[in-house]
Length: 122
Image (cartoon, rainbow, N blue to C red; front, side, top):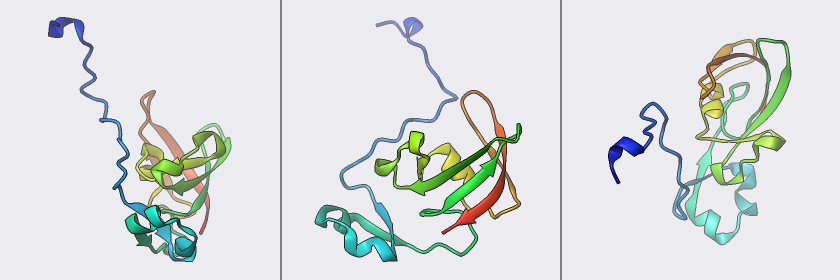
């Protein structure tokens, strides 16, 4: 097929493809609850108090004043409709390291959004 008929999205990141051997991030408290397959891939993560990261629930306020709450989880456990976002998602990347009161920029395909972090729970 001629390349003239193929739409290239050079500015879009490549999609994340989950591998059966991909690391499975877990908090120490949840390590014992994992099945054998996930335990073999487990990477224990420590979260600093008050800092958004894996395992955190973050409440944000957008530019219009709308509130939303997100939990950063493993990519394979993500359920955006339920507020569970994968650790490699653009939103999780924007929120990681943020503290209550800080502002982050979420780079979205439809345009950047500025979010104010209202609360970070472990």
